[in-house]
Length: 137
Image (cartoon, rainbow, N blue to C red; front, side, top):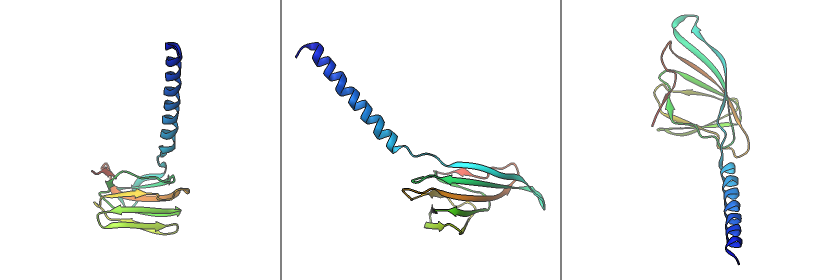
């Protein structure tokens, strides 16, 4: 085999390897959550408090980042199941159930399903002008 033939063969092998690598990376990609803001405003009874209502859709295999909320949060599961990991353990919330998050508790949300999305509505109440969610390590 000539040097040109060896070079072409090597380029072919490297091209196949690159294509396989891109295919593996594409299979490992996990889409992120999709959120839609439904409401944000001051509470009618106390302007120093803000309420936020959001709809989230978590794709199959979703793993959120660790975080906590400094004030009250209520999560209602519309579809699928939401798995919540905290220092107190793992809790699964099913469609039609409400999960109250304790202020200050570090948590991580997961959709452990391999095929179905999880859809939730989140109700947050907090101090106006202050963060509603804080990332944790």
